[in-house]
Image (cartoon, rainbow, N blue to C red; front, side, top):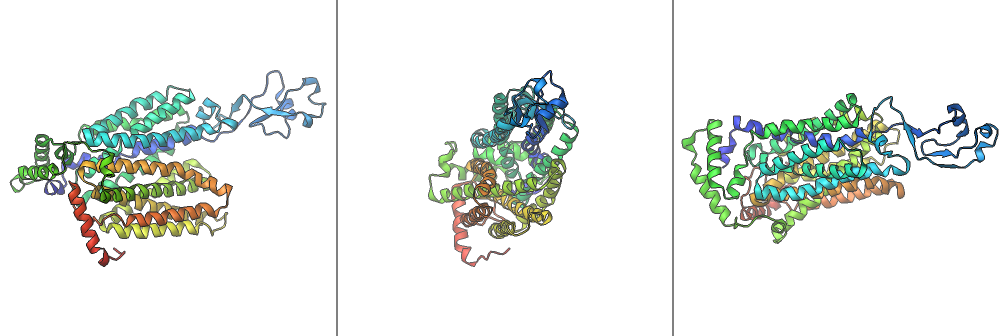
Length: 521
């Protein structure tokens, strides 16, 4: 199989496009709520029949965003002791339209006692992705990578347009959950592209997904700068999905999955197509032998049974790998979002802040690709976790007004989390066999959503206790994740395993050579 996939050619063009741009719609989706429900100026609506200047004088000293003094007769408004008149909560508001024409803040009156609405809506997104990762990881392993990806695209497009036609808060949350559920299925694109290239190019297609995420970060402020109506912002972020439907027409199913699922005839036709399109020397490649060897190996794994979560838990050797991947993913994503929130809170202009953050992630994605493609996995984990701890600890020392130093340290922490994320993403594909590879990636992505949901609470813990408490918690979690990383075998340069027996052989090989393997590249 490696001989067929090793040489890049025209057949790989749509595969690389899918890898590089596949995360772009998700980047738009995650950040869209920040611009559909931005910070706007608002104040309590003035009652009819009262002159505006008199009404302002009546409410002197009152925060008119959430409270207003009970109306007094107009004849007494200027002569009575206004300061003694009690105030009450607002029930109607007016909004500043000088910057944004229509926002979700105004649509729902999500201010004052209702400001929880935005946090809940964003939580629906993370929870939807979590559920989607779990469900689609099974669909991908059972019915194919391309089938799962096609279904997820359809859900995102239909539900995405549906969201723009509703102004009901709870219906918005339900539809946003369903759209996030569809985005959870996009993990199938990572598996499909990884299984469509050789080991030498595996890091490129895996780490290349960061490019799409970065482009999403860059496009979000550009789109929302010119489109200030939340309805059209929602519709605009769906447009890239339509382009991916067209791209998917040129992407073939994973040849490894076809053999894993027992579709030998389809796999044989696809391998012949790859050889023909990429102009390989067919006489030097025995397709029938490739199919026979893979089929024999898979028969030993009892391919008649579909993969389930039990396959990742029922054996101690595999369970250790699963725990390591789940635990690391949760900590890495928690670290990423913790640093991300810190950077956003430190900045003032959301448009330039998000744009520069996306611009900075592009070279980091390139660096990640180079590191993962040229260095062994275990040293990458060790030094990246060490850099994470250093940057988080250093954030305790700069003065609060030293914004530049804080931003540099936070970006160092975010960079290390991206290196860890990409290394682990490739590593999972190299550790788990074809039968459960998508399931392993999907369930690991689920654990990462737990980290994403927990990240905002670190700031709240710091406000309740002390500023050093979140730092200590983050350091402790990074230390635990570093220990978990040593459970995974060294797989740099190894071919993707097709069976659990091949995975166990790699683990034994790593165990035998671990004493002579220093933590340097």
